[in-house]
Image (cartoon, rainbow, N blue to C red; front, side, top):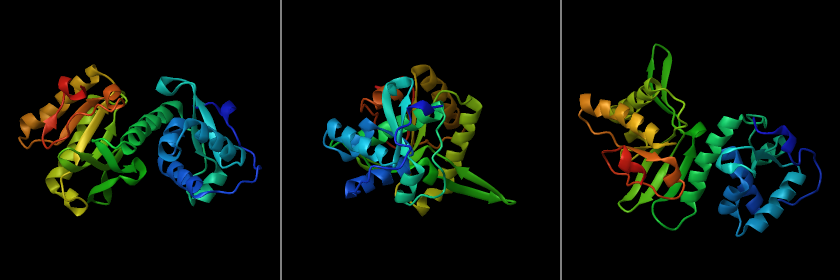
Amino acid sequence: MLSNGNRIGSELGAGITLTDRDRALLADLCRFSLLTGTQLQRLHFPSPRRARRRLVRLCRAGLLLAHRVPASRFRATLAYQLSDLGRSFAGAHRWSSVVTRRATAIHILEINEFVTLYSTTLAVPRLREFVPSTDSRVLLSRTNGRLRYLEPDGSGVLETAGGRLPFFLEWDRGTESSYRFSQKVERYLFYWRSEVWRDTCATRPHLLVVVPDQRRADLLARVIGSFTATKPTGLPVTVALREPVLRRILPSLTVGMSAGRGSGR
């Protein structure tokens, strides 16, 4: 878990007047659950210094909680989430502010690194829209009272050299078995072939799978390849390596499958 000992601003106090930027910041934390100071600065502030100063004020006012992330690429940085008071200001009343498990927190922060990097650039590919996992679930079928869903880690629209492309995001941590991943691919295959996507999209959505290393990329490429071998319809899937993606090196997302060694470079 993230360290409870590093919470900041849990008490009320330090009267503060919320600006439009503050409200937008609270809304983004409501949508994305957890964001680092750098990610919030990309979205809302012209400089790191101004971001730090305002985030301290919001913490002291009891609107935000801050946690130190103990490991991973985000070590020695602060990650922010809404306090219960902050959630009430943002109009979110469904959940209380619980401390996120460490592995889950890192997963969320990596996805949000992707979102903030690609949504704040002027270059293509550029993220035009993004919907977090909680609001990206798609109902696939209803059989004997059982509901079957597509549950990606997020969905959105990328502006590419070839135009706007809707996509689903699967941010792979390397812990899911190949069998579980094949079940996930089967759901996407059902989604594409049943043309459920036509209810919300003009273009068939792409699937971007981001993986931690080349070994994982090769494994998942073989799983995806097994579907194209037995079912000739091409899958609009790209498997990409995490580190290049987070350096803004994203492989071309086109209709058809791109997977394996060339996809992350």
